[in-house]
Length: 258
Image 1 (cartoon, rainbow, N blue to C red):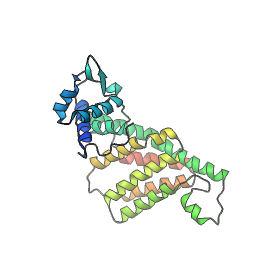
Image 2: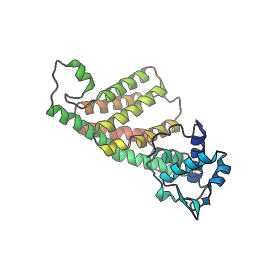
Image 3: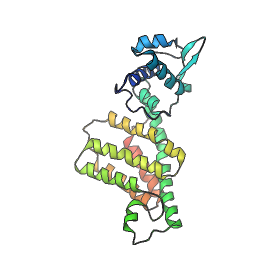
Image 4: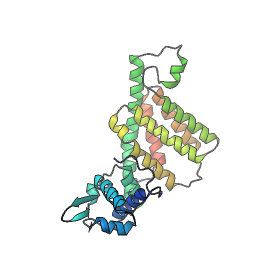
């Protein structure tokens, strides 16, 4: 996955603009499957320099969207070759004609992953507490750890506190930021490296929700309650409750499939 291009689409640099232009053109079908081109042709299309276009084409190649060859030059690859778990590809698909399919796929992924990650996080906290009980007198450690061991739960606790604060304000942008932090913390606490690897994918799903709904839409009190409950279940080592509550959260924050 590409990880260092958060500004793509925002026009933050000639490179990000060129990459975004070409990525969206491929996803939208403006540059269809098997279309061939040259660096010079893409320079004319984007208005960027040769060096910028060359670097953008390398990124698109890494994403499985372009191939390069001496005889054919640059060739657009079919969607089955794309790195569909990359945040850039997800973002482009959400902005393209296949947006509904991408939303449904993100929904299915969240349903499959997040409840399991919440359960794993709770099990991890519980197992750590059994292996290394916390000294009751160590109050400071209790703020940063779960039931008692070495598993750091500080990021989860901080996210819950931020959610409560944003809901009290109320401040939508801060709430959404804290929401994303909470979901990321759950994936990290699962101690499953493959779940954690999907942080950026889940984050794109949460971004999509924020863009789909009205910007001034305030969080429903019950949504806050659910997020607090899932955090409390994880900290208590209650895997069953953590999974069921997270499942309800996902149900409430994703649209029904088309």
